[in-house]
Length: 269
Image 1: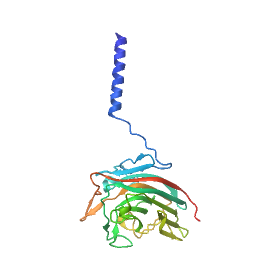
Image 2: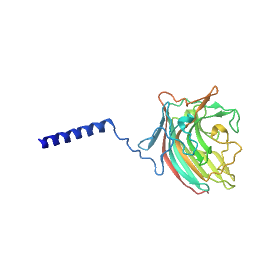
Image 3: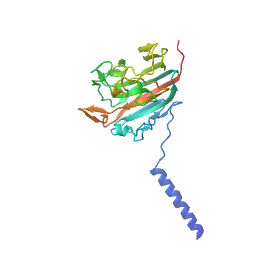
Image 4: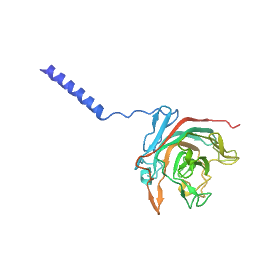
């Protein structure tokens, strides 16, 4: 009798275990490029299919985890939405190459708006959406970003990288930079082999377009000791008729694809 009960209990345990496994499958681990991981404030995990990484945001997506800088703020509280990979930090003084290919996979309805605080083109077009972002470790310390909107396409510091009609195809973006607080700074951005921005002999640890909406504090000179890079979707809150609101992501979602990352220390010729 006891043997029959033991066998019955064992079968019941196996049955329950199998049912639980079906009801609650484990999330499959994603294989990201070496040295990259999902960012702390990413709300939706980037998905890998072959050589392509897809970043997607759906309406209402946000990360409730605090930024960890003592302010108690979070993306949900600030009405921001992100899905991204972090490439880690490098020290100021490092010379780096950041390169990847990007295309819009669907759902881009976001238009540029005329920002009265935008610098240096006051009242000029601005975006709340970026696909790559470099920032220091200090609070409100964004440095440069690759922005995206359906009005201008892909832009870097106001320079055109790919027009709106090119967004469905792959665009190769490369940023060669020596992060520096002094006169030996160098920064060069290229799109599909074409140089769109180049400076040298000046600091590169400052935001050239510093204004409040760009996560930068005008008039405050900051010299970060570490710079980190992120790639994916970074969608800030919008202000419509004076009222802050979540990014206007279409019901079907917003997606971009990336591939062929190369992030490495470099030498300047």
